[in-house]
Length: 171
Image (tube, rainbow, N blue to C red):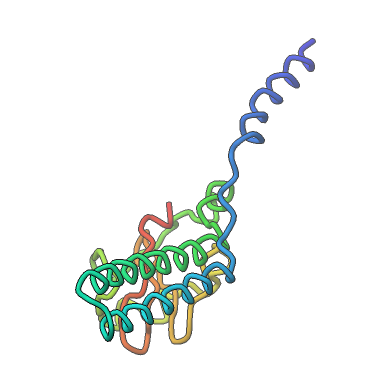
């Protein structure tokens, strides 16, 4: 009786986890390219409206270009973060993201993309050597993921610019 009760309890606990909605599938590279082509087409239409159209045409085409840029940015963001959803992985591998005994000789600063920071903040000592282990997106050319207290910062190490910030990455 006890075994049957425990089995039923375990099944009741496991069922909501199995029925939980899965994250949306990642944007395909094709969709990002299609958005880029649409932006180019809208920019071409704007150039033609400036050359041959009236004010209403130009205003309308500017609006279309703004919307196409916004769509392209969103598609790029979805493609980039949709490939490896680190949030779901972090939930199931909490020990990997444990903060541990990590100290820096400087105070915490809240960095924002586009900010320029001193090399002391992104020295080799703070590099995330294996970003694929944490399901972080791959760093681009001359870029490196750096740990800054509980945050992870993507740095362009040649220019000292912050490219991206993930706040509260580590527990």
